[in-house]
Image (cartoon, rainbow, N blue to C red; front, top):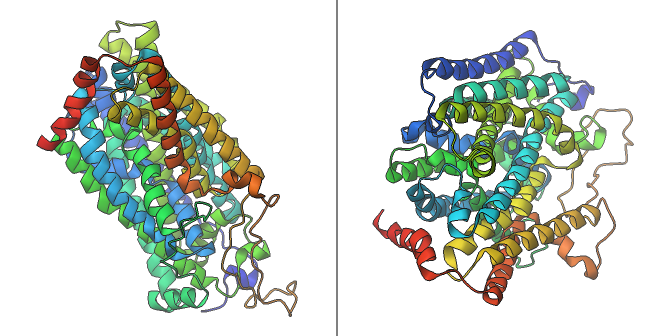
Length: 560
């Protein structure tokens, strides 16, 4: 490789004017789509039009929106970092996606779609009670605002640290633009901007992968370098739940983590319900699967190429970056920085992931609060025009809350692990509550309340404990002998990262060492077990109630 890269000069190439122009352009296009639909549908005051696009969307944009909603900037930053610091075993999480899509398409979507719900948590009232519905809604809202804050803050922080790209300027501009087009354009604007943003994400990933591979002598050479440094590993079948990543934790634990998103999360349920028929909703879910794999594996391959590029000089050990999530922006500036505008394509890619996730979150939060709070407790008989106006105001309010919570993300460490931990700690108990209602006819509202509460408390206990008693995470070594810095001692060639950042856990704290990928499965088991026991103690609902709302719907899955 030629001279002039950051690890050789200890300087990082700056953004050019063209890079800022391209970043601004994606914001303008996204806002333009929102204003277009706001103008086009200005005479339509139907709340179903605003929240569910009139239930008349084709599978293709719905599929891309399903993909974009949770394949966010967190995935784009975190997955290459995972490959760089650990091993290729993370590839196995793609297997969980297959089962997630199948489960969501043929178990959860038919139930929600046939009930014709706007809020997924309407199901909890039909199955249990209004109180359980409200508890589920508030739990979802907590999860979503925290997740959106991470999604908004993480790429802004990473780009600011590496490129000098203004931190709060990007946070505020992205947050404001996203809030505006979601509030004005509704679900149609969200679906079509997501479609545009998926293409931006794929373009950015492909550009980085191709250019990076060229600089290291081809992808085959990059794979060889990674293999020689103990980073190619696929067959860790350890049954120990404290092993951070194994085939079992990625395939099975990953399934429970992601099915909580694709099966019961309001953002995804709401998208599938925009299709005119159940069959088209299921087609949309399956069309989303190749895109999931494409973004996952492009990100993984970029991580391998990134390791090969820095294989003799780790930027983390030398202070070029302060966190692993900043590695990819540094790599982009090293590989694309000589081509004005191309780093801007990557920025567009990164913030497209953020925009799609935040817009989906704002729209889903507006739907949940309108249906589960405003209509349920305040205005039980709302006119269509008033309901639409309230939804727009709610989207703006949640956009402001998201902006206000962005500082929380700085406390959460690795963005990928933080996000998946959040899904497990909060999304897991919610998935458990839905599972309790769908699979156990004797479960009642007391069991649902107890199971959800116990699951949340137990998972937060484990999650907080894991932050205090951080488990050791063995990693392959990182090398620094290729650095040209005079501050490096000449005798130093290998500096492994410290795997432990807190007190060493003892046997008494074993629960805190459980892999974050098992959080959701643990939460589902805890919620269901407690829910079943409490239900059996307190009595059951009449059989007809369960049959009407669950069993018949579930049985009819064989006919769709």
